[in-house]
Length: 320
Ligand code: AVJ
Figure (cartoon, rainbow, N blue to C red):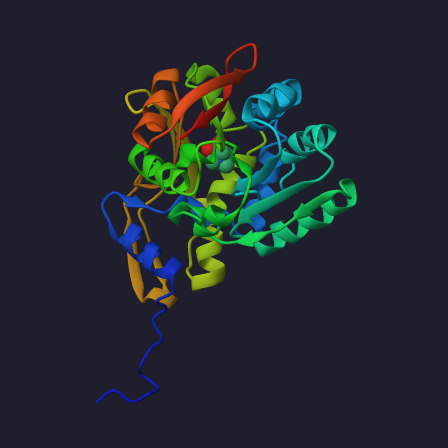
């Protein structure tokens, strides 16, 4: 008979369930959102400053160049909402321009990370005294009903190319749920990375300093920290591939040997063959047609696109 001492506690929180499902599957996978613990978020910040990672700086330059046009197109008297705002570092560009056009403004940053929202509050409060910030802690992928209760014209920002981490059908689901909270005058501003040569894409996801490799491996380090697992990080290598058929970058962790790993919190034994991979991320790269298609299928119409001169990154304004 089992005594209470022999009964093990098996973790059953949301993360544990997803890890169990992903690492129990063939081929093995882990959800990309697991990247973003405190260490992973800091590593991502570092990625955005790498010479090879053009996305963040290209999107920022588009916002800097076209903030006036974007707000003009969105319409007068705007309230800003940002999905996955993080510390809202690129949003400042739009807020600054907005406060040239109207005396005061409201901003609803939405993010799963309370600490990121605190940081956004501090920064924005200091920089823009006439901005009222109402942070919302939560996951926007299931929709944010509270947005439906905001009065006045909204511009919903979904920038940063986060949409690229979702399968197109999931992206449509997310956009649909957002659309339900919008009225006819409201608009969506969607930032997405364009499909381009793998000569540009591959280094962006496999940089020479190894920051992206560290970002990817942090997911295993996190399982070691949080679930007491014994992944040997030196026995896995970071792999980035361009999948042309699906128009996406794919990120993997590849086992460098036959090895076994134990995850005590899940009471889970894993074995890896040499070169066996864990799929950790897809990053979809959109063509104009794909953008039009996901917007249309989620009930939006594309009104205008702004991009950089090389057409590496696009910022799209859509309406219900
Ligand atoms: C935060 C989803 C936009 O896909 O480019 C960066 C994450 N992964 N390097 C992206 C990421 C590897 C990033 N997004």
